[in-house]
Amino acid sequence: MTANNEADAAEVTVDREVVVSRMISAPRELVFEAFTQVRHLSRWWGPDGFSSTTRSFEFRSGGIWDFVMHGPDGTDYQEWITWQEIIPSERIELLHGAFRDDPDAFTSVLTFEPIGDQTRIVMRTVFPTRELRDEAVQRYHAIEGGEQTLGNLASYVDELVQDGAAPNAATGRE
Image (tube, rainbow, N blue to C red; front, side, top):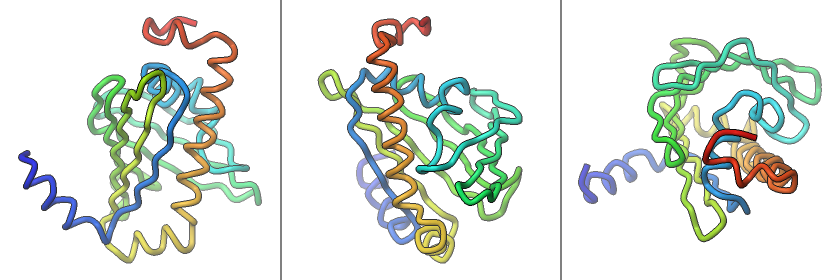
């Protein structure tokens, strides 16, 4: 895709997207690992006060993550993510809905950019319609929830760094 085509595509989706980002004080490989291994995800995924229970998890292009998010008020939210594209340590594209083939599912692209010894993670989510985006923002607080989720990731990765996990992140060993 050329730069002009990318700019045109961004203009087409601007009224259907939510973008959140966060600087994380850790190497890109460690941030990516925390986002892509279920043993890590279960420790930080979701907005403040939420927890998750994984039913199945296969991190590969075409793989799925089938899980339930438990809200602080006791409400359970069925969740289904299909990993669409994975470029290790750089980029993840996923389709996120309540169930397989959910017509209201949205696409998120996450990029992991190294900046010195830190990582900027950007999560760009595009909804099928403007109305679904507006509902996610107003009813489900998608912007605040996304910011809290990335904040929880940052806090969790900070704990890993404090525990000495960072030097081994590139090898995948702890």
